[in-house]
Image: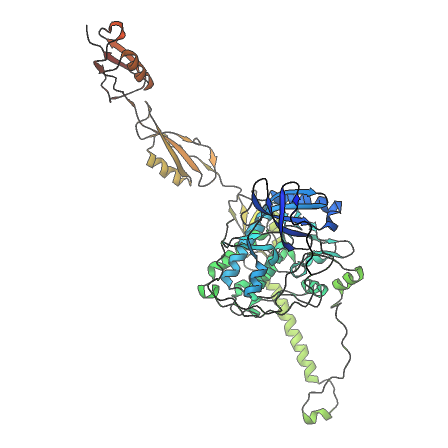
Length: 607
């Protein structure tokens, strides 16, 4: 039996009319509402009363809402307002009509590579904007990815967002509390989010984005279990498998993207969502249309073996996803993964200790049974004794494996996390791994001069230690001096600006005595000023000397006014009795061009 929601129909803060409940999450309930002051539809996120009564949690909720409100990006759900009305603490946000990525996966199953990338790229663009603004989402999952009716992807619900600590250049925050309290959605938690008091940064979003890509390509989550502790164990101790094991049409390059993003060690992952987006776009350019549009696996997802509704509950370009709407949807199985709530899980200290140290703390020991003798007929009568050749073979396998592993570790290694470091620190980290660097420089609008902005191969990628790792160091923002184009024709000025990597802006024409007609008088910004690449520069072009107006037939006063308005002075000859005469002729003649302030002689008839 559905219970009546007492908030529906009420007016929050004297402004927001609550109309319809959209969804209930771990920390809040989301309603569709109307901003009566601006007459627009909004989404109202109202904290659960139990959490709203916690002053510390409410203060953090408000502080983080203000941080997200400063983040303006087309792929981020905008926060308009925050307020409180009695016991209701709420956010007023952009209302996004459409559905979530979870709805899409539930309806269609796995997506084609093209559709998966069309969704993930704007997600990474949104997260990248947050990361560069010093914010970490910490709860990236399909339920928080919205797809509008027009196909625009938006990242929502920064409810667990944290601000990076930029004071010492080491962005960190903590997602676990003392005593083993784990906050988040277990299927998308990075290992460091599970460890007690472990520092976390933007790479937890990179990890969750890798899980998101795996799920879109395969239709299933990489780690499942009978309970959340089993899933957390797998995040800590097991690598995310390659998507191609479930979806054979997935290219090896995408397997590598998932492996890098979901590396259990944060330093082996891309530095932030911006770097992961760049790597994903590089891979996309190498894929053929057949690889991009290959039929995804049909209904390959196992049922989630842990509760999906958990008690004690508390993101450069805008990309339009090209979803395969023309292809009939793959029917999703009845046991398809259901939405997961963001939860606060209280893990007892003894269980947390076992989770971190013992092989599988959640496994029940299997009952002992007599091993079945599978030897053929006559051999069953012989006693079971270790055979010498078996021991020799095992020793040989171990020896070969050890040598191979040793050689592999000696010859290959992962590129260390050098993004954001200076050149000297990057060199030190590479030396530590036995690698050598080739440094190059490039302009960057976001990174200060001297900071590492890219590596090739990417961070975390395994590479031969004898091969140089290309390290790109920022030269700072690129600025171009405006060239001096005065005296040039408009076409010559446009060519000079293009050669300097600037563009010609608006052109204004004006009369000028000293600059020939058609030549540039000045530019705005002026010559020598430093501008960003492709900035428009406006030009003022000379129309030459001023044409003399025709004043014949005018009275003396009217002729004087007309000449003065054009910048000339007037001299008179003849008799103009009582000022009633009309100008009979003028010199220079009307239409002739003369410098301004030239004296024009006007003649009146002799009476």
